[in-house]
Amino acid sequence: MQSVGGVDVYLRLVTENIDAANVENIIIHQKGESKKKYLNSYGEEIKQFFIPIQREISLFKDIMAVYKTIKILKNEKPDVLHAHSAKGGIIARAASIFFRINVLHTPHAYSYLSAKSPLKRKLFLFLERVFRKFNSILLATSESERIRGVKEVGYSNKRALKFNNSIIPLDAFGNSPHLDLPNKYICTVGRPSYQKNIEMMINVIKKVKDQIPDVYLVIMGVGQYSPNRDNIVELIKELNLDNNVILINWIEREKILAIIKNSLFYISTSRYEGLPYSIIESLALSKACVVTECDGNRDLVKDNYNGYIVENSNHLLMAKKIIELYKNDKLRKKFEENSSELFKNNYNLNFNIRYLEDIYKEYSK
Image (cartoon, rainbow, N blue to C red):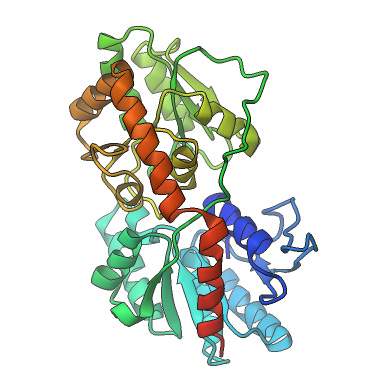
């Protein structure tokens, strides 16, 4: 699997909190991705194996990755595989046919959603439809992703499960000092990329500025794996937003959480998601949200309950909702309370981890 971004967060949360007395994990991924060790619930280092896996299609490397995975599986003899991302899912399922072992596949947002050309989208969707037949059970991160797996990829409801992305409660999380930011700001976490659609966000803030000249937007996660970074920097200059938009490179999770906690509210303009951890963290920190309508976002934000959901291309409506929430303290407070309640009822890992443990047991060979 490819252990970057949300996948890495998922793995660490699961391995550190699932009962190591009942579940022993090993991790197969590409070398050099994660410098920090993976630990189990006892604080012990988890065994890792490295294979030549990469995001792009490479026939030679992909075949080698499958071959090496087969060798690892032959020696380790796992009871069940849990594959992450599109490429990780293909490699694990291809290797699994030699062992008749169940593969729980968690896409973390299907790769065909990222394809800009119709031809690539059809190709990636075709691959998902083919490989769903290889000992595959969908383990979606959200109900939206599960439904997409049934309707578009072709899973039966029986073989389409859901385990919500979840985190440990942040009740005891304190404010972090040394943050040189304005007193009032809104924020987001998202690398400039096709998926996160930060271009829409910048254009929306331009419209918000017409009504609120001193509006500030803090964008975190601008750094590694940010293919559209230069475009965003240029757009900010073009729209004269240099004093309104603050770009922050990769920083520690504690600082990210502190920035979210001290913000007025959280926004997202994503084109697609699995179930975004940054919004889950915003709910845990009792933040209202204004987000685009896509998988993941629609699971976490209920329109006019804990925030607003806006059609992806509707710049004017999103700007209007941001202005409304910015100016209406009473409404924002109501949304904040509802966000906290949604988190406690649905995304608390202390409760949800037992469900994942039960899934592993059920689908072990």
